[in-house]
Picture: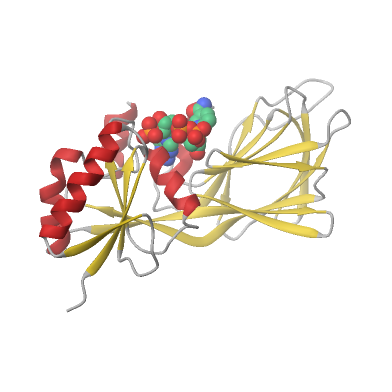
Length: 267
Ligand code: NAP
């Protein structure tokens, strides 16, 4: 019988690398074939580290469609489900199929520049901001209707999964991941007699997209930051941000409850 392959990604801290070594040995003893890094034949991706490690693996391996389990090695660990001392329980529960899958929606940005288009994807969010400390002026349309010329540091378009990350730090709302929506939260909005910008989050249903046409007289560079991964564009023509079909499938065990996790990590 062919061995079942399990891919393992770890960040480079000592405890994560040690956890990877121990997990690989335990998986082998349990009849699995552990692989360092992602392979298309894998049935499961294990990410060892904090949420940052899970985000890094997702971007490195282009959002694979297989279930993902996070092992938290001493970080906040909002996506992470188990701790290094629970490896035996994890293997037992996995073999006996005692788990559920939490599907997390993602967000996609299509950036038009020159005659090209580039796509960015995020599990947490897409941030759009100008360079240095210059004010960004962003012409925002929702569902094809022009809404306003936003002025400030920028905006965050977050998924429900990312609502507890950067979005939460700047006053956005925490959203249950079962809801299908995008949250648009302003970063440093200017609201004066000279500039009028929305100052609280907007919630958009999954079938409405956001179109942003940046304008900036001092410096026309725009940063698009997807889950902390930054790209820089000179005078992009426009950015379309939409709810994406790609889902991230996180493995959860019996006691998982989103709001309980919020309570233990934030409240
Ligand atoms: P990072 O150091 O990898 O992450 C910053 C913190 O955000 C870490 O404590 C991380 O948890 C936590 N985090 C990540 N995703 C989360 C989620 N969905 N819910 C709750 N906490 C979450 O920073 P980075 O490499 O710049 O960017 C990664 C993420 O950090 C971004 O997607 C962004 O949301 C967030 N971020 C937050 C702020 C802010 O709050 N002011 C600023 C920039 C970026 P772990 O400790 O488990 O890794």
